[in-house]
Amino acid sequence: MTDAIDIEAVLAKQRFLEGRTRFSDTTGVFARVAEYRDGAIFAGGFSGVSQWERHPNGDEIVQILKGSVTLTLRDGDGNEKKLDLAQGMIAIVPQNTWHQFHAPDGVTVMTTTPQPTEHITDEEPPVAG
Image (cartoon, rainbow, N blue to C red; front, side, top):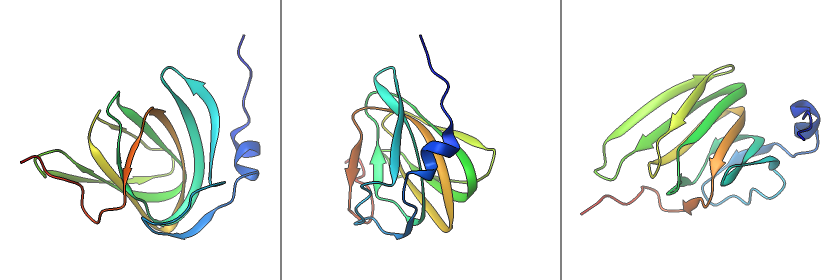
């Protein structure tokens, strides 16, 4: 059987990461809210910019709970798309697509994320060659 989950109560236990960079330690920032298929649902908040990441085993659902973020998507050929997302919006990050979050004013997100996740601290993701 399933249980109801109070997202606000979950987020109240997490620390908000102010001034995130691609080198930041995100321990205690993102809560693992629930298991889901081959991954999990995560929630947390930050301001700043994330590492580049991708998910080789499936699409990721990104939901904005509070604030706003620019989500940059980059495919293996270097083609780029920027999505400006605000509270109440969602986006689907296609499987194996490099993506990065930029939230200068802060954002709280909930993601449904397949595992594993590949993170890199490079300034730019690799391009197929």
